[in-house]
Image 1: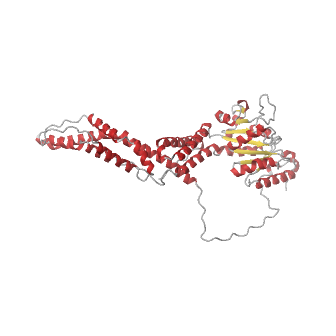
Image 2 (image 1 turned 120 degrees about the vertical axis):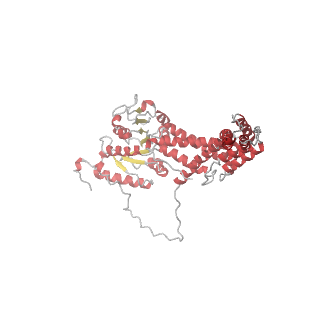
Image 3 (image 1 turned 180 degrees about the vertical axis):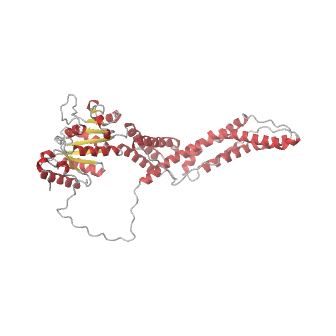
Length: 487
């Protein structure tokens, strides 16, 4: 089965994911008996998770400033926002509350409620100067409590929020950048989970150029030991504004990327597809049997064809009357119905045949529906025609009776047979679409060579080998008194 997808604008992704989740939900309802209970329960849990994330909104990019006591998170928060943000009744800087700045026309209240940001701790775009930053529209910037706080509640807040954000800005200062609490407790975990991170070395205005170089290099080395080989160190002074413009540029780039909530919904759908592969037949593409063929067979069994021939005979003068409509025979309907179910479930797992069989109206009810539809038809009157018009009149009345009879049979089987089968097929295709997405998302297998070749001896690592720093690391830490020189 081939599935095609359209390119959509980033802000349309919510609707695209919502449609896929809704298709999964409706398909599970229609085909619930075709999927084993454990798989079905797992899929329903995935739908619930997706609903929760979509309800909160996935078009926001959540960035959190995290760090220890004295790192200057709150000052950096204000420097990025461009306004001194003070919570009413609370002295700044505070390490006990989560503050949020929101860039965007929407309020993001549901998401902020879920994150645990109190209404009085929210700064909105309507408060200048946020309205002047269209490049940051869609950004939610959080100022978290200190991760090393003696207050257990504060650490719990940090631990709860960190997994939910798109980008972590770890703020460290030159005195405590090597603190084991942040490396062991957080940075290595972020590295293991692959959570996007940046490390901000704050207070560089307090250092000489040479000292800033040494601290930055040593911090980069520690990050490499934590597994963060590609995470840059960004020297910043929140107090003087040095390097804040570079950091804001990083945030603008983050806003343009897909949020972690969107990734989570997409990942849940991919996982659902992998789960569904256990309940679906790979590459099966169910086809609807020939409806016209079924209609013709049932109409003939109901005597429609015989009555049409009799009407033509009356018009031609070969018969005196058209026989009365005979009741439909149950065994004929049952046979045609089972043939339909067999054809409609060809290539599908056995349980899907059961689902189609249960969705299609039972033979006894279908028999009654066909009889009622035929009894309601206003059949054309078959009279003897003049000699020169007998052939044409006979053909015309026969054709009209066939059309009316087959239309009546179709009106009975469309809602009872064709529609439910089409819905089951569509449910299968919707579910199979997820398996196609899952297979597309799976990593390609690593090719194994026919012969095992001994690897080359790695070059010895010397003590002078260190992780490289960002190429522009000196730009933010240049000082006027240094005369623009650096080593």
